[in-house]
Image 1 (spheres, rainbow, N blue to C red):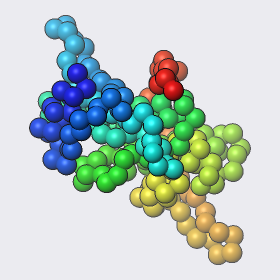
Image 2 (image 1 turned 90 degrees about the vertical axis):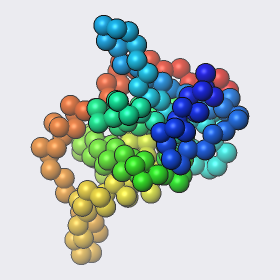
Image 3 (image 1 turned 60 degrees about the vertical axis):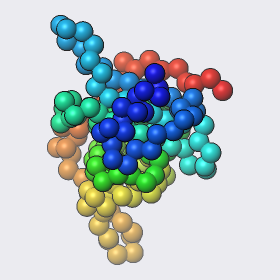
Length: 190
């Protein structure tokens, strides 16, 4: 089944490389359910064990054309980070990113970093790159990309950088947030 999903992906992803050894990857499929049954929407795959010092939270993400522009790509990326959080990991997607993958990830990174800023602020914890990385499950480099994209860092002379975010964005972000408490996840066998 996993091999077939990879072959299907090759039809829709220009940069997709099909591997013969799919047993090194977990595949997380998403289905849309209606009165007619279950409809395959897309998936993300992740390497079981990352060989590098950095954990890849996601290797490939694909949403079929009829289901695009419904937020499913963002949902799958958020799900990959939520699973990383449950497994106590900080990571990044496998590189290089395609043009559309880069846009998708940067959007999710911005949202994850803002949610982490709000969470740390509510706890009264210091908002550092390390803490943002830990709370968001993003590597520090991806946190920095998100902060630059958000344009929320300002220099304050000798005091160092100042982070300024609009609190009204929190409500909008919470509407799109993955309901982690409803996620039942068991990690891969060692």
